[in-house]
Length: 275
Image (cartoon, rainbow, N blue to C red; front, side):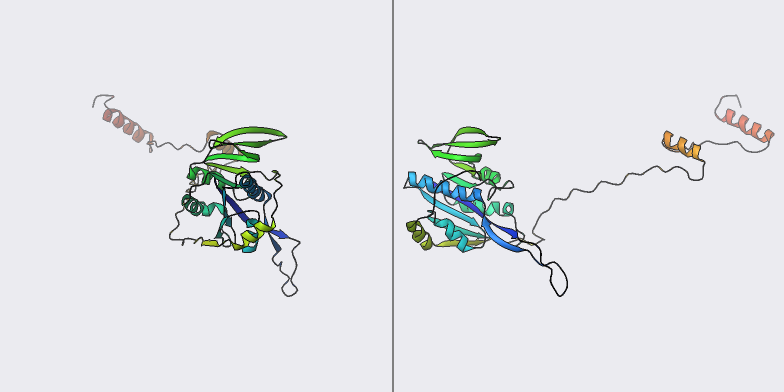
């Protein structure tokens, strides 16, 4: 059985900010490299399955930059390794397509990753969809059965468990509470030190090559403002009525005789009275 393990290197801040003496600005925090417990659980699960089936092979895809940290993972019993280098500011989800291309070159029966590690933020679900594999999340125990099927025990929170049967190929995301007693041994240390690591570097596309979808901002709506020249009661009426309604009317202006003649001419024009 071919097993692939995804492991992501993470950088955690340690300590408190230190104030510099010259410019009194906050300096960078101390940082430490580490691996998530869920990623380590995935690697130990792969080693356990290999011990049960010695013909299995473990292929590690390490996302990070520290080869020494990768060597410590290989000492658990890996056979092959590939290093996918990340640059500052890059996220796991940005290199999902590259990882899928690397994994598609070899047909893996089982892909393991950490629920809170390499598979976090939707990366694991996306890779499972691209690989066309069955997705199992929050696994705390995994056992291999025959006829291309496996059994996983999932945690549902609050002490609840669920046991599911799945078929290969499968993508299993291990929970950090998974406890697998698999440690590195001297033979594994020696074999892991001899593994040739293939390195890949993800190139960030230029801004002109990147396609971005931007939702247009809504147009501002006109807000009714009452006439400031009127009194408080008039402004209140305008607010309650929704604004000042202006009517386009023709007014009759002049002396009474002129207004009467204009009104008669209007009635004749509309053929209300005979001309």
